[in-house]
Image (cartoon, rainbow, N blue to C red; front, top):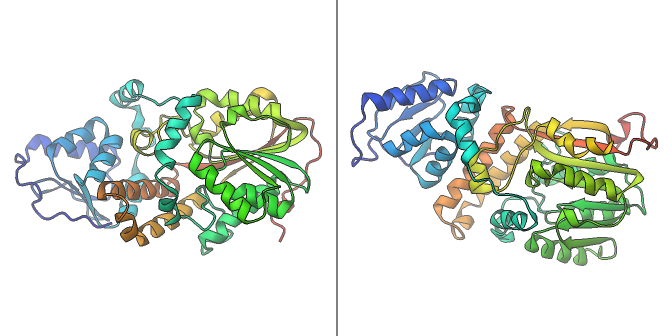
Length: 409
């Protein structure tokens, strides 16, 4: 995205001082000296890079000093508000920054302090509903503009980089079903079903009975309408309720993109639910955004986009299954698949810009472009991972000997 800045964009701001220049250079040094050009409110370019891929324009001193205190939150808010602009491609700019950013940036004492005192929205039974409301009650019409036909809002699975988003989302569902080795007549429970695409796919193509839980009223209503229109009412039951209230016994448990909203303090609770509902020969699969090591959630994403969210390291994900003695059968990282999925979403979002402008203001649009581009850049540069963890009860020996079944035509 090209910014709308000019050579002098905040004439009312005080003149740039040596302290301003010094602090900005210190900030860029702490970020690994990314190949970007930075201009201040006077139009003066500071800390220019000969290999700059974009120009970042900071419109006022308040924003500059805020970046020094909490760069993650302030950059997001300032970009959304137009107080930071990017001349050049936003995704390319973010990838260039993330590529050189040290992995230990959160070690600064003030960053640890900010995370310690920040308000984290708890994922209690009532808190989870409030958290989900902020993100998903934007409206189904908004998501229809840039998701695929099935409204799959999780990482797709690309058998080749030039595959379409629609095909890749179907391949993701097929990949999950093959990992779970679903058979006709089996019972499946899904925790956090979104708009219901996977539940319908499992019922239609594998002949299973599915109970799918979700606390988003809009998504559940849409999912029920789709199931009815497709003649799947007898095979799929959509339940507007929290995963903690799952009842019954099932041959398979699946959760795609929900663990990020559970909160690490509730992982053992989720594990207890899974242990209580799976049969002796049951299998489970959890698909979640992850990290290479435990660290706090970014303040901007947690406060502005996904309240109550937390992205776990693989070691933390295993806290769901280890206390109950489950055997981990397979772990796969689809990091690059999610980078491409998000790129496709961003391209569709941009193509629908005029329609979205009729629904939301420019601040909203800039925030969502930053969210989609930032996440794509994070996966592309290894800051984020996408883990699929397959597990089963330890005495279940009805398991395939190889992975050949995952790639059969």
